[in-house]
Structures are given as C-alpha cells and as structure tokens.
Image 1: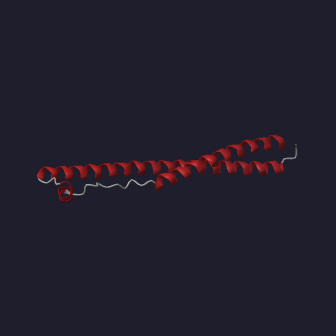
Image 2: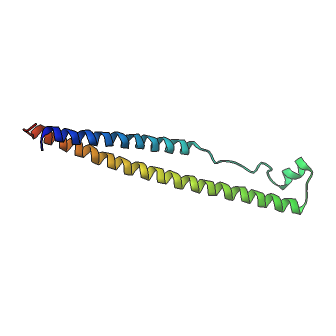
Image 3: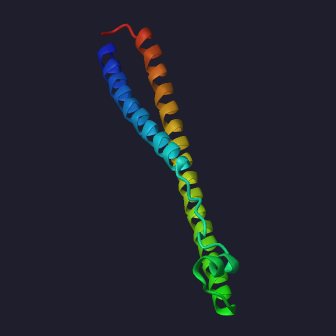
Length: 122
C-alpha cells in the first residue's frame, strides 16, 4: 500500500475521530446540564397545624390529607431522582464508550502514521 492510500485512510479516520469528539462534547454537555437540574421541591402546605392556621381547616380529615399529600410529594421526588440518576448513569456510560472508541481510532491513526513513514512507495 502506498503513502497516498495510507494518507486516505488516515484522513478518513481523522474525520471519524472529529465526529466522535463532537458526540463526546454533546454527551458531556448533556450530563452537565442534567446534573444541574434541581428536583428539589417541597410540599408547600406544610403540616396539619399550618393548614389549620393559614386556611382555617382543621380536624383529623385534613391531617390525614396533609399526610397523604406530603407522602405523595416525597414519593414523586424520589421517583424523579431515580430517573435523573438513571439518565446520568447512561450518559456517563455512553460518554466512556465513545471515549474508548475515540482512543481506538487515535491508536489506528498513530499506527498508520508510522506505517506511512516506513513506506517507500508513493
């Protein structure tokens, strides 16, 4: 194989490497953005006592409702956090996979560069 053919392979691999690096940058940006998303929210009505004071609604029924609503909010918050953690894990895994692929391409390019330097035919 001549130097021109080897250079054509190197050019193709460099183009693929640029594409992978762009994908890695996008994945890293998505990870950073998702990491910055806060899922911290709270049950604004508080507890049964604060509902009674603020809205003049008291009694066992309202206490039960407040407890149920707070439990629902806490469950949803935990669920959202689980989804966020899952997505972050998937993004990190995909980024690492693409980085390994990019490292492989870089190694191939290096090998071809050495091969090109040792090739005598054009």
